[in-house]
Length: 231
Image 1 (cartoon, rainbow, N blue to C red):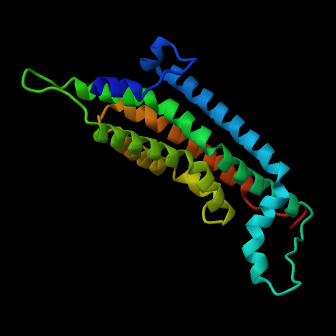
Image 2 (image 1 turned 90 degrees about the vertical axis):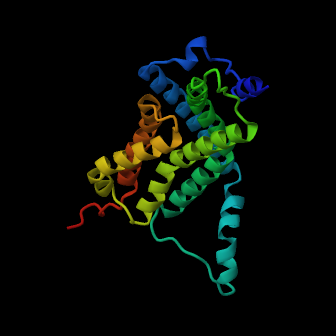
Image 3 (image 1 turned 90 degrees about the horizontal axis):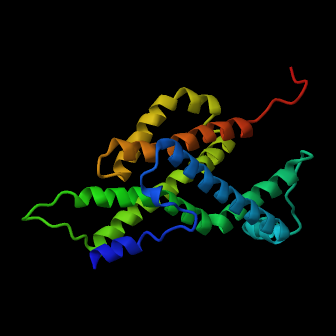
């Protein structure tokens, strides 16, 4: 019964091969690339849909502000591209929200092999007096912790984006503290992989490091620039 539940929790992907559970590091990176591409396509589709209703979404976002303004008062923008940039940012956020279920599914498909390896590892500790029979609640708690952990990790670029927009962090600050970030990332990876396997820790840490580096690029891209020709 427990074995059936364990297998049922990992439905096979249509494009998965039998070697899915024993891939090399390069194959894992290729799998990560594939999942990220699919997530980006989903976000792009969500952004496209959001732009179809962008006026309604913007009205919804600023409804509390309009109610707080005096009658007849309006908000203004002073830079030529400010309004367009605002619309793009709102569409990106709305598109990400729309794509969130699909993104979570892609994250799940990426971490599922690690769960399988972890359960297999735990199941090796048995003897004539000990038998591994996982409880449904314990298995569900393990899945939930790892899934939510990876979902939060994949939000790292978004968090860095908002921190950089608020000028709380800079690309230089993030780059200088990369070594400390990598240390924290491996600690988080160790928490997400309770079997203690260095291979699984590296498997979880690699995408986190990649997302951190992506966050540095995002922080650099959104950093305020001096006007052209300014002294």
